[in-house]
Length: 386
Image (tube, rainbow, N blue to C red; front, side, top):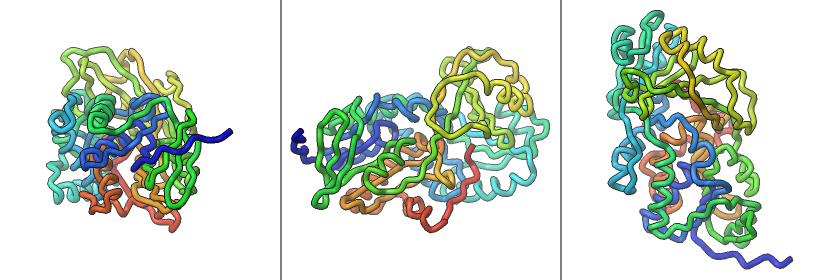
């Protein structure tokens, strides 16, 4: 069968989640409109559709702090810049620390944040309990508090970026995945699952947990392991919990924050979860979740759970992102492997990837997150992850 001649375009973006749509929007905002975005399912149908929604600059690694801080600024301006409300609730992030050995790393992280302008601080157990009515001060030796952080609606962010990118001239195609990528005369020829083909000097891989497979098509190693994470919800409570901070117990990795209907979102990082692409929802983790809550938020330990969902974390060997460019016989840019904090960094990362494509200096130096670090044995360290 004779294949159709590929359609010449400027950039093919692979992935219709927060990272892909942000990149497409930032390219278009910079005047690059000859962009095709391919999404195998629906927009926000992968990890971006089922994250915690947290947005923060509370990290220990300087680059993570910078990406989070710039993204927070962009989330704050989202409606004005993109034209969509995203339900931004700046209720704060609260890390409860119950092991003395964990205090010093968080103190060092807060020092990094403060140097960059993040108004975070270390507080005692009594203040932490005043900030979050569900947190028990018993056993808490300290806490890290970042009042400018919070949460937003990820689906609205993705759809907002995609709709405005379309208005600016970007072609956004859903239900169309990538079947193959070939290098021909310094350009990529991308064959889509519907048989359409595109020839472009540059490809951007923003395929989340599926980025390893996309990278392999281009001969680029992007080491990612998919890992299921589950979330549960409560019914609305009295008084409404909407403004309850995003609260994390660093010892058990259990966490919660308020929801727009006045209930709570609850989660826990199951250390026994096997890697894989399973996104089925179960209740077999509710027992360990309740045990973890009983240790630091006992009022929630027996809460009635009304539903939940499952999504995928895209884990790298050091739990930090991969952002950069590789030579695959064409320009292969990538933004993947965010290990649970992709949504919250997506505005700044999309801007950085667009700058890399344009040959400009990115607003945040993302060179430390080049995927080549794994080939040299280098690793990044981030304390504030779950």
